[in-house]
Length: 483
Image (cartoon, rainbow, N blue to C red; front, side):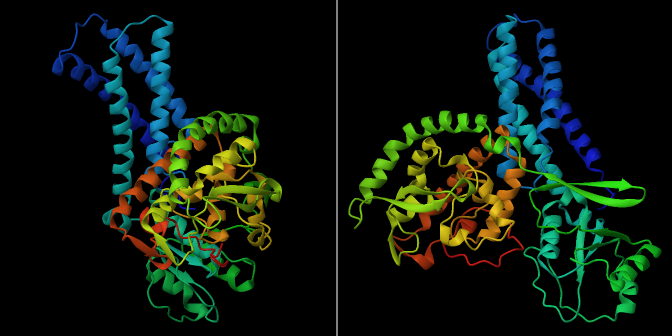
């Protein structure tokens, strides 16, 4: 799309700012430790901290490149960025402390603790500042003006994605579609009242509106009318981009090849190797066992609160797991769709205490800690082909869709976009990041519980989208949300 901001150049400036902050953070940590706190003698040579700083610069450049820590890879989402930076800085500090121990370099641990804290806060502040600058009204007015050709789900999702990526410096100013087609504006994109324009006057309208680029999202962009539009746009200096189809081959990584001037879109397997790897199973067993031990008292308290339930405090639901294999999923016996729920049941549901028994399913190998949430067979049988790709990995206790506010009552279409994105980018680092984001999400829900009345009807229960900011409304929402 737009060439106004090169992705590599954008990442370069972010990492350059990170490295400059690292130098400043080391100086601040050193001054805080020895000048302000005046704690202990300066018996460690200054060059020791210089060597640690040089090591930090090298390691952070490598981490930044491998984990893509610019903060805009999946669209701006503060919990995701904070969790990724926290993990990366924690790893960096572990390496520094381990190196000091191995080489018997005795330096102030307080200085390095302050250094790590300053690094995290500074890196997060840099990305937040960049996001505010890119999202400012002044810069948006200077952004490239885009018009999207099409009115279908791909057109709406393209508009939503552009809104989530301010670093592209693009702004959707309108949509072009056939007058006989219905159009539902995408969430978050402001549009005016539609008007009819003759086909021959479309390019003149684009020039009047100072449009810089046209994005074609039609399933059949090769019609004479569209080809003529593209030709005339290029004549007047308006850039033309095309979304390749079939777009729904979502788990395929596309690579454009040029064979003697003939473009060839090559589709490769996009499922990340980590998604079904033995390493992920080891993570599930190790961390799952630890979480299971800590969750037992919490689950027992929840079970006691539900002891008077007709069928007991626990229940098992039939769900589809890896490759659609059915299994029984454990949970506390509290129905979200009940007409009248007590305050204690609402608290158990909103804090996901009702889902903690599924750690047993994780230990049994039927589920994973992170992955697409499992759904019942009656919903799975209505999956489209691209939705069925969710079944290529084990279902999870939490996932990318859940940390963006989507839960069981949301449609499979909405959740599938996030789930398939996770499957393509799954990694050890990403899984830990999602677990930290889950803690953030639960904390956000906990803050909202103070406003709940003693008894709540099902219609009054605030959705997770209301509890946690940042839910991306998918353009594909054709399926019922009933579980």
